[in-house]
Image (tube, rainbow, N blue to C red; front, side, top):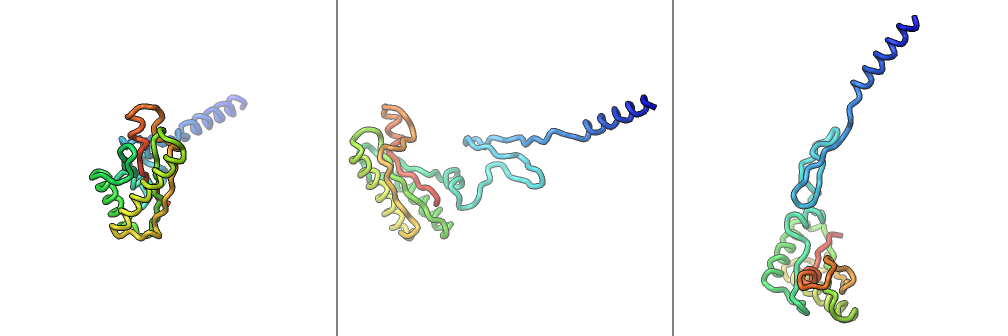
Length: 169
């Protein structure tokens, strides 16, 4: 009798072990440093899909930053092209509001860089407003040199830190 109970219990354990599978969600790289589940339980999520009008969409489809020359706050041809793309994106999502961040590299005083960052953010805001984006949807802020994108004291680092960034609110 005891043998039968042991055999029945062992069989039950074997069935339980076979019926349980490891629930893992593999991820797939989108190639842009973002990972997304390839398939989740009960729902299907496409790789690289993001919410329309989100910061992720802006960053992935257009880019969320533009760059300035040393001590410059006016948009060059590349900056105008990026701002034009931002204007088109904002027209596509009329309910989205955004903050324009102005940044500077580490050189210069704190006060100078805050003023420069403000001029950069205002330059972008003015360009977007000229493209028909309501000024009430746009907010500006200057971080000066307080939030560098790249650490370091080289021209390469400085060029990445002299920037304007469009962030979705």
